[in-house]
Length: 309
Image 1 (cartoon, rainbow, N blue to C red):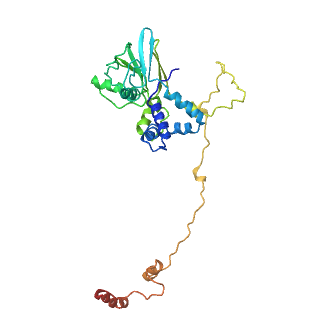
Image 2 (image 1 turned 90 degrees about the vertical axis):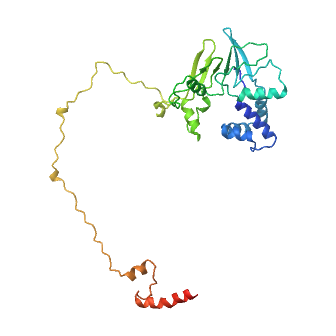
Image 3 (image 1 turned 135 degrees about the vertical axis):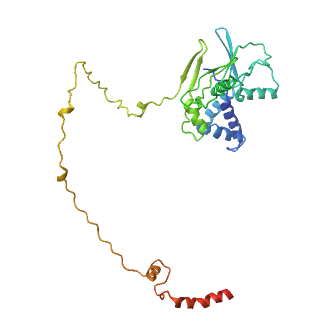
């Protein structure tokens, strides 16, 4: 197995460099990988490793190639994560950084020639990449041909896309574990996601995706117990038949059914005056005089005093 560097490895290396500078999670590259690309769990597992293992992983990842060339049945293929990177072309330092950035991040357009501008001595017939989920190209193609563009059907899984000059094998495998992700786009992608493999010898396609089977909800038997096989029923065996006409339910006389009598307790309310009600709910003190004209006369001087004040 030969590995090529992609955008997630790129972000991993950027995070390692940021931590070496003392960013402590405050760098924008770290935030992009931790949260936008769900890399926080990978980083937490990485920092728990011994320092020697961390160093080995970072050195191995930094040495990953940006492209590879393979010839099968006389057809020459160039492989990169997202966009071609040519090892046999001499770039300036600035141009080399840009080319490597394109190799892991750039999205190839559906009619774009991936070998345009190539000045090397090699020859390539087809380009194979990932990075862009194939759903993007299938719907671009529908738009070009004037077909009605519909929202993706979650029940239809992504397939490998074979264009004129390139093949995209990214069928969204990164979304297979995102069925309950907070992002609605990732949840929708999880229903279409699968891992794709293309065999170049005969261009046969292989797919692997999570299968939710009803049998997975059943409790499996204890593997330590011996397996017992049930005796097979012989074809001549029949179950005893039951004729519905021979079945009779016992008759029930409803007049014999008696139900106990139920008596509700009598509820009595004591007589209350308006003053009693006001006292009960706290509007009047218990020792106050009954309401009447006398109360209005005693309150009138206070009201006038307040108005004069």
